[in-house]
Length: 198
Picture 1 (cartoon, rainbow, N blue to C red):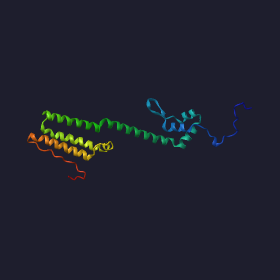
Picture 2: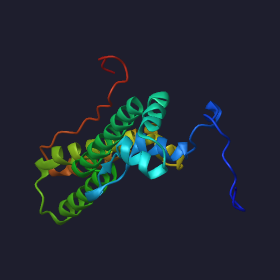
Picture 3: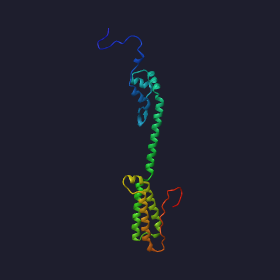
Picture 4: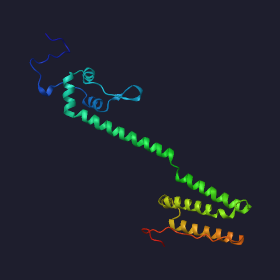
């Protein structure tokens, strides 16, 4: 006799289509990506642990893993994860080591202003014009490097920067003229060709 509320199983072997049912997506994720382990690591459950968890036999989990190619997919996922981790670590180290372009511009601009103030006060030697020319060149190089960003934000173009640089050098030459015995600073613009001088 069958109790109320319980259905009687049909006699004989179950149909193949009526195989054990379990959450295939959950099992697939656990086999390929694992679960959070101790100390922030990843823990991969064994077939036996998964079988006990979802209530099927160990061979069913093994067949499922083979059919879905879970072990090879796990290896690929681990490789991708390691590559992403390595890329992030390298980027963090690069960010820590490199000086930002904005920092270089700020320092170069500060140097130029302080040099000009020292020149007006008479506390700087006039033969340090080469230092000023070098720092102006560094500043203008960084500005040229940022030209694309500046153009997007409405900043000056490379030609405008070169024009400003030339004007600055002319101002330096004009202010240095009466000091006597000083040579004019020549503006050399870099060529855009392959090793050709303008």
